[in-house]
Amino acid sequence: MNHNVMDRLHALLTELSLVQADALLEGTLERAAKEEPAYPDFLLDLLSMEKEFRTSRILQTRTRMAGLPYLKTLAQFDFSFQPSIDERQIKDMQTLRFIADYGNVILLGPPGVGKTHLAVGLAIEAMRGGYGAYFVTANDLINDLGKAVREGKLEQRMRQYTRSKVLIIDEVGYLPLDPVGATVFFQLVSARYERGSIILTSNKSYTDWGTVFGDQTIAAAILDRLLHHSTTVNIRGDSYRLKERKKAGLFSPAPPARDEEAAHATGA
Image 1 (tube, rainbow, N blue to C red):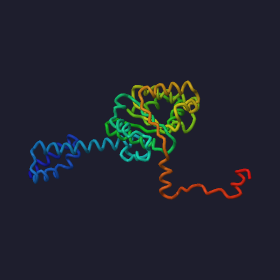
Image 2 (cartoon, helix red, strand yellow):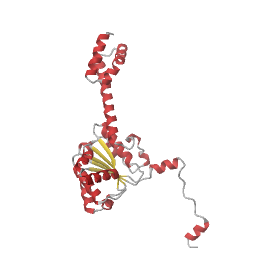
Image 3 (cartoon, helix red, strand yellow):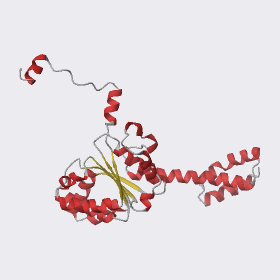
Image 4 (cartoon, rainbow, N blue to C red):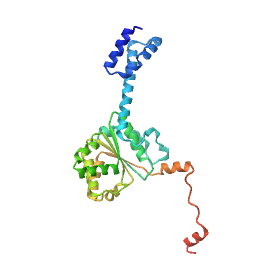
């Protein structure tokens, strides 16, 4: 193998920032010497590995910047444990058409049924599809934007939550919002309306959102924008966390009442 040519090849690949192609060049050439592929096939193989490397690196960067609480894919979701979920509906979301259409996904259900897992899984799919995503809990979001209001920096902070193509807001409804919190939430939803997608999880049905936001009018305005282009997934089932506790033997039914307690309960 001509060392002068190899040096020039390495230099050229480095100059073109083809990092992975440069690292794999000699191994690929050795394999090609044995298999004798056509020149286009050899070049395709080398450049495909470069592309795969770049895609993986971009995904790692996006994932790190997304602030996900954990990495769980949709493939890891146990649909058999939650039969109320239409798996075909989730698979349709995996096409990411809702992002291209600036649509939203609303995941409703009691704690522990897998809402956050589905939201994270959809975010990972979005990033694999080339979209940026950002995850935040509703509590952290409201605290951050409320602080920005007090400091006169709301517009600056709002950019953090509008720049990503997909914004995941987790746990809406676990804590009621004060008037400032409700107002900034409305402003954020309005700022993203038909400009970017929201994936939102909540333990409250839509009829309870007036209580969550402390005002029926502002709750209706938020829902009007969220639901205009949206898919709602209602999850009715048991908690995964409770399932795991039972499996581990950490959960047992309450002991039967003692005789005197039972007698008292029946008025004997």
